[in-house]
Image 1 (cartoon, helix red, strand yellow):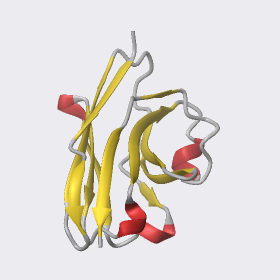
Image 2 (image 1 turned 180 degrees about the vertical axis):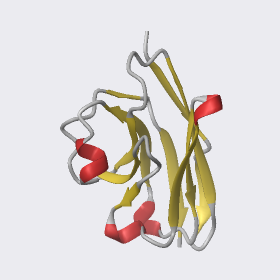
Image 3 (image 1 turned 90 degrees about the horizontal axis):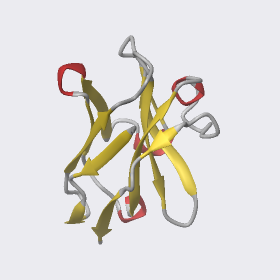
Length: 124
């Protein structure tokens, strides 16, 4: 059974940092596109990383967030710096066999699995 388990969320003040982790197990396909999306008032893609290491970000997080992965640990990361109150959301990691998320982080329809999320709250 495919499982994605996020951790690392919490409450921080504006300007602070958090690192989210996501352990992925039993995904049936090799070298998937991996990404993070968040849900507050609406669902939006945040960042994605393809099997070749190419990354893509939504404009509002460019220069502040960094997505990375450790294939040996089956773990995806999201380093978030200079956090803003508008980053407050529940963050989810996801896989995308279609790779649409890695071509355009705004396209979420191709996601096939995601976790239960971790809450990030940024106070002003």
